[in-house]
Length: 471
Image 1: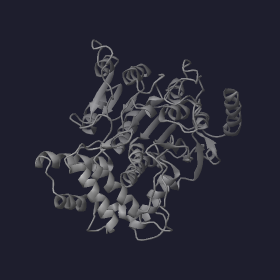
Image 2: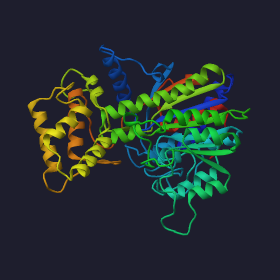
Image 3: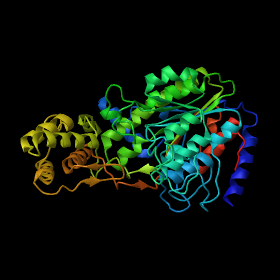
């Protein structure tokens, strides 16, 4: 029934767009976990930094067309990234945890990236997390379990899109078969060039036919780029991934391209309820979109840019019971809570687990502004001291766990208190069923003006671009 509806929808869109010029160049940006409040919170934070009540707009929120989308899967009112990624990629909803398969968990479905490839377009897929993570994988993989990383990597190689980018392969070896070749070797045998870091991309891209751009060698975490708030010189950025992808897709290109870019770490920050880190990730996402927007300005009659999210994460709310906001307080946070946990771990090693409360107060002041730019109530200071005692009281430490990280009690307490001072709230460490925003500019952007569902978005893009929808 759903398929019949989508076919009728397709016929309708063909009718209303047949007179228009097709989009030769398509950018599809997905802010993982980026709900409506995450976007507005970032803009209000930027406004407060400028000394005003109100918003200072991001680039993508100024695009002429905006709406909201629902995100439920076939198995739940609250989706995961695999099911929502599949909907955004294929126009077909499926069960949570599943990639590129119908709800029967057997029948594979093709993505808009495949439709574009069949139409003669070049195709790029990149992200700030693992290149085989759920959202990017939804555009090329067909797996019952999103955790089947090695098999997802095999699907990536088989799809053989022109450009892939990400932090790395999450599982480059087959844990069930020690004799199996690594994904790196298999990719090279299939004709891929692997580049590590933007500078190496510049060296290798000229002679490459297909390329996979990963973090520089020696990166600490293969699962994701360092958060924007923690970034050091030489760290890979989503902006670099987008710039490299656009450069590569335009090489000897006469027919156009489809390019999906995921801001994957917005979700990771929201899973940790880390407001300051989330805001920096959304600003970073906006910087990547600027690469596409500058391209659009040169090709306004041939380009479509669509931005959305796969789901909302954390149940983020602007407010905590008081009719006020103090978002500028988040500017005093200088590192993510994950990085602060790393800092504490280093302090443990250097002091042989003998970190004084006075030293910890200095460290909290340095990285969160407490007792300096941020005033604490006696109760908040009491909470920090208790967390310090839990961390350094000669007992087993109970870490604060979310989907992507485990944090020291003192790091989690500092994050919670800076959120409270900023007057923002979180419902959970998980996803919610809230609306996600949709923004569009360029050829066919007018189709994104009314409430929609995530599975309808790729169908609309395909018609604007002239792709044949292949089941």
